[in-house]
Length: 77
Image 1 (cartoon, rainbow, N blue to C red):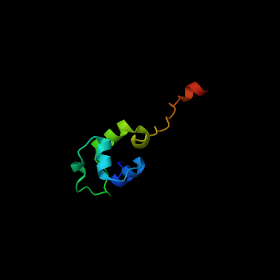
Image 2: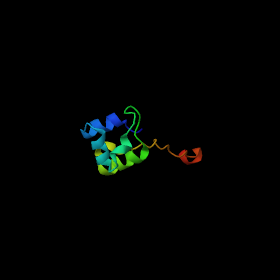
Image 3: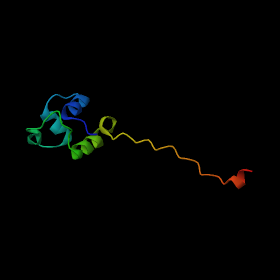
Image 4: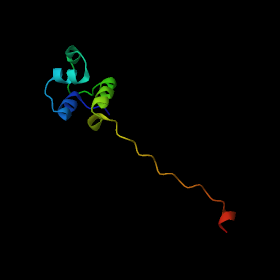
C-alpha cells in the first residue's frame, strides 16, 4: 500500500510539499490541494522507490509453502 504524503515526507526527513516535489522531480504545483492523509499516487511511489529503495520499495510477498507431491501407496510399500 502506498504511504500517505505525510508518511513519505516524514520518512525522508523533509517538512514541505515543495521539498517533496523536488525530490520526485515534479513541479511544486503538483502538490497544490493534495490531502496529506491520502496515499500518494502509484507513479510517485515508483519514482520514490527508484530514488530511495530502502524507504519506498514494495515489500516482497512470501511464497506459500509448497506441498509435496502425493506418492502412490504402491511405491511406499
